[in-house]
Amino acid sequence: MMLNQPQPALAQAANPAPPRDPEASRLLRLWVELTQGAASAAAHRSGDEQSLLYLQLQVEETITDRLPDHEALMAELWVWESTLIHVAETPPETCLICRKARLGLPADLPVPAALGGAS
Image (tube, rainbow, N blue to C red; front, side):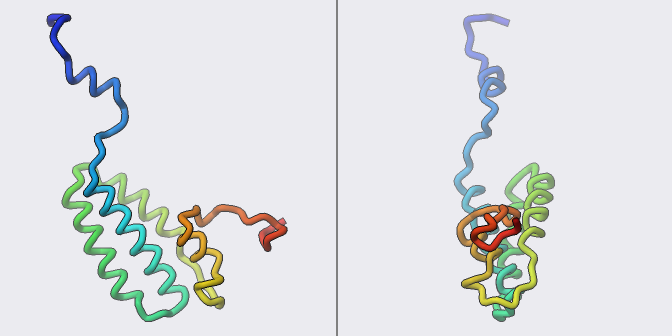
């Protein structure tokens, strides 16, 4: 091994951040949006649940086809998806879980007691 030659493998190992894939990022954002919409539609009986779930599954298939190590990623996404499941008697506009999803906040984010959360 000559020390004066560039060593791309070492350079890649020194940079732990994976290369950015705009198409994969777009697909993941789309999956998240569809998942949030489907969860809200299911909870609030809007009638859009089946079409949103169908679109979500199509995006999911595309993700698994395009990303080589998709098993761990999809497992994490499904765990996150389970945090969106809720039963609500309130309209989606005032539903706390749906509101957190629209704002991009974690579903398990505690709400201060002064704002109606647990004390």
